[in-house]
Length: 302
Image 1 (cartoon, one colour):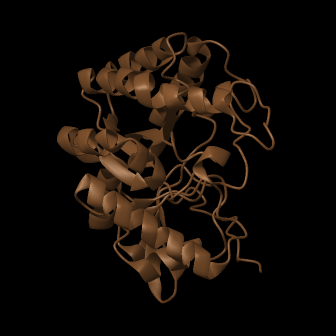
Image 2 (image 1 turned 180 degrees about the horizontal axis):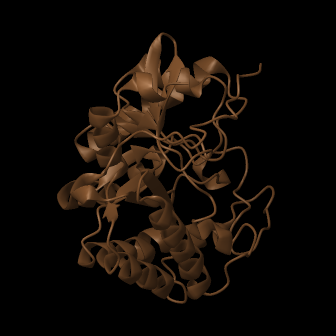
């Protein structure tokens, strides 16, 4: 099954919008909560996760090494990162797999207490590409019910690991309650899509300004590599935002940037953003609500 693709985008004809405080750039810090939701034979899954500091899959037995590396994120990384962001006064979105929150319910409770947004990252940490429709529908419902119970409110955002399926967005609309999804990587601004007779908001995510590059491509080695790249993105988008809005997503993982040899890269980035004029740090829900309130769907629907 194929889906129509949009190669045109805004074509440099952007909506006339300013973010709160007359900012030109909205910056979204997203902390991914996946610990306990990774594939693991010990959890009854079909196989073990194979991607981490060293990419190696243990077959036929629990991978205690991999499990321990994920546990670091919940035990240490979460607290180190959130403490730094809170001290900087930066609003935060947790991109949380529901099974991870079931394993670490204190994360959901802390998010509620601190005012962090929880965006649904699925039930398990897995792609939905190729999932049978009925199974995907059930997993969406299960994940939303779990987060609602642990967090105290239903998530209004969704982001699938890697690729969504051709049905995901339609199933989110069918389920109801979602303001936005982030299952796209194709723009520097939110936009609307027409689907099932409705207009739905998409907040694109990014894999380049993302600490996963410490692992996947080894493009980042030191914390300063992450900071330098993200700061370059901030400066480019700020320069463009004088007469047109921009949005930047910064992806973080508790078990990656939360390590002591990398965390200073986040500190450097935060210090840079704080001293720059024209940047508004916000949760993804705040960005979505501002866009919905100020940009009518007819202006950007595709």
